[in-house]
Amino acid sequence: DQQVKQNSPSLSVQEGRISILNCDYTNSMFDYFLWYKKYPAEGPTFLISISSIKDKNEDGRFTVFLNKSAKHLSLHIVPSQPGDSAVYFCAASLMNRDDKIIFGKGTRLHILP
Amino acid sequence: GAVVSQHPSRVICKSGTSVKIECRSLDFQATTMFWYRQFPKQSLMLMATSNEGSKATYEQGVEKDKFLINHASLTLSTLTVTSAHPEDSSFYICSASSDVNYGYTFGSGTRLTVV
Image 1 (cartoon, one colour):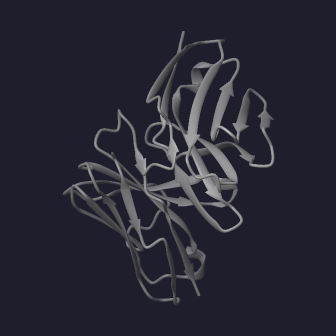
Image 2 (cartoon, rainbow over the protein chains, first blue to last red; image 1 turned 90 degrees about the vertical axis):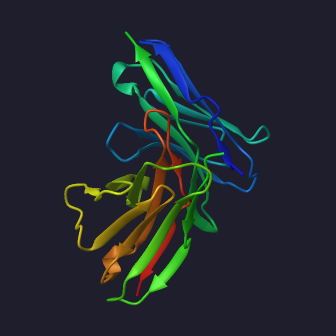
């Protein structure tokens, strides 16, 4: 059973607009959430994270929102740039018990010129 | 669908011994499997890419004789850490894909502790 779900395999967004990537999870015990970005032939690199005690974390153009009641988080990228074209993975973990990271299947973001 | 099982989830071994980690695709044929190692600050470093039936392609700086990767079938890849040292202690994670243009499925990772 998938504990972390990214239901959109791909997303296309015009350059300069906002990109919104969504992620749902099933385990209410998850207390730490991460977003990774992956370019072809490279390993995923950490982008931004959020603890379950917060509902928003912002870092430059990237903002992650967490809705615990809905078990949903989203990554907002604004404004979108060509270099943002990549695969984005949502991940969750139980930091206080086990640092195992559970990944979603990823969403491929295409930034259109 | 698209489930990847990784075992063991945790292993503790003595320095100098070897440890094998398995990565299995349960409901699809994984033509390509990737092995990663997690470093501090949560980045995952790609160690190697393996295609079924052929030798793995290792990333620069990864010792192929120390991290043996075998991808003998379309559903199984193994990573063997040989002559483990405490500095090999880390979180290792695999991912598998039937077509890298359509996505990857990650295993749940293996926490290796070398004592």
